[in-house]
Length: 197
Image (cartoon, rainbow, N blue to C red):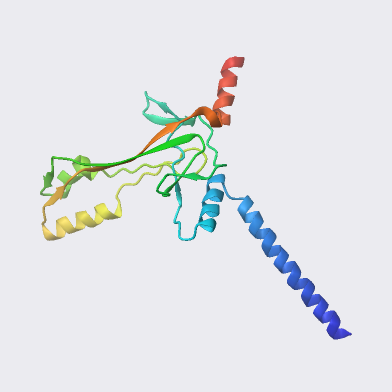
């Protein structure tokens, strides 16, 4: 009788821990952002798909021309359709149409730099980096010195080398925003405040 109670308790513990594991994984999936949920679903369905980036925050965002800064999002960004660009590298918001371009241009003028200061002052030696994140809203990142630039500087100074720089531009996609997802809630609230004033 003691053995059957022990087995009953272990079965109950095993079942409850298995149930807790399933509910916690569902809870984790629910706590993900819509973008991350799409990425997780795509990676689960297509093995080997290494999707981790999205094109949100590029189209449908306000811009202040006087201060040259990004402002509030205008269009709502939803990821219910879980669409990707044709080559599958980026997740695309529902209200954005993507047209592949895949055009590369190499600048015809090259620059030669005898020291790091001339490289730093050139267009190719820019030290500031900015980018958009996959978060609701806009994320900006800035830094003073990248690892590649630091290594280049150390190598130039240590070995008294000359650096050459070429400019390469790669246009991958044309992004066209549509209003089918509607306006962002914050933008809509601002419009309502203006109308009610």
